[in-house]
Length: 160
Ligand SMILES: [Zn+2]
Image 1 (cartoon, rainbow, N blue to C red):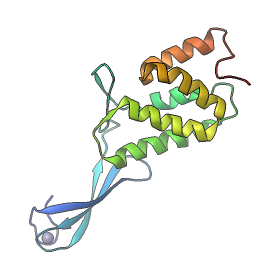
Image 2 (cartoon, rainbow, N blue to C red):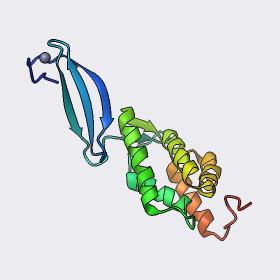
Image 3 (cartoon, rainbow, N blue to C red):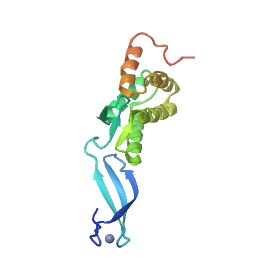
Image 4 (tube, helix red, strand yellow):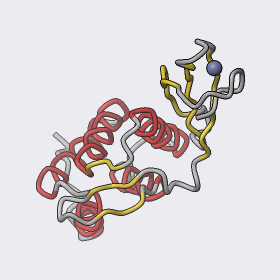
């Protein structure tokens, strides 16, 4: 990145984080030639910047909507609002952007989802965790969870 002060192309990134709306990554940089600091913004093209490495080796683009949908399925008939789930999906998205890895193991996303659900609703958390642990993959998990929830087994997740 060319320094706006001295035009040298020799800088060091000192901080990276996602912007509040999650559409860009803000990086603080320090020019190694003149020592001045400047900020760059890398726009996120849709959500292409993050890729998810699935357990079977396939790589897909990160899909925030799919993530949100998975959490909605886990929270079905639970007192968790769409806004809370939106906020949780955004937190996960921002955290992944801020971590700066372009390719994320799907298991990492599962962990983050479990963390959010744990805070939001115990039943949703147990639903997610009990099914997810067997699959270790968000896609597989979601189709199984939908099947189970839609298939007349409302006891999943332990009402006790
Ligand atoms: Zn400079």
